[in-house]
Length: 243
Image: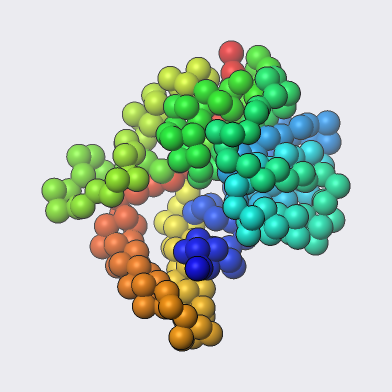
C-alpha cells in the first residue's frame, strides 16, 4: 500500500510552506554555529536539518518514525556532504527518550501532532535544552476569526488566531523571541508541488489500486486550498527561549 505523504511529498525539499531563506533565518535566530548540537523531532525528509547543517556546520539529531523519510534524510545528508553531521533515529516522538538539557536548540517544524499538540510539543522541546536554550516550532494559525460558518473544520485543524497561538506557545514554558511567517507564495509553492507530484504519480501508475482514491483526495485538497485555506490559514515558525 502506498502512503499518501510518501507520494505527494516525494519531490519537496521542504515539507512545510516556507523557503530555504527562511530556514536560514531560523538558524540565525537560534544562534547556530559549528559548536551547536540540535534536536529535530519529526524531521520528515530532512530539509531543514540538511540546510542548517550545511550552512552552520551544526550537528543535528533527527527523530523520524517513517522509514521512507528516514532513508531520505540519510541520502540527502550524504549528497549534501553533511552525512557526518546529521544522525537519524527511527522512532516516534513520544517513544524517543529526550536527553535533558542535552542540546543547544530543539526543533519541531510542522509536526506538533507527534506530541498531540502545540503545548506538549513546546514542553518536550524545552526539556531538551538548558536554561537560555532555544526551541522552534512550525505551526498553522487562522488569519480570520471567527471562521466562516460555511467552512467545514477538520478534526486536525484545532488551531487559533496568531495572538492566541503565541499565548498557547508561551504557555509551554518559553518566551517568544522571533517569528518567521510564511507568505502566500510559500503556500502556493508548497501546495502546487503536491498537485504536480500526484499528477506525475498517477500518470506513471494508472493501474495502482489506490489511484482513484488518491485522485479523489488530491482534488479535494486542491479545491479546499483554493476555496478556503489559502485565505484563512497562516503558518509560522515560532522561536522561543527557555527561561
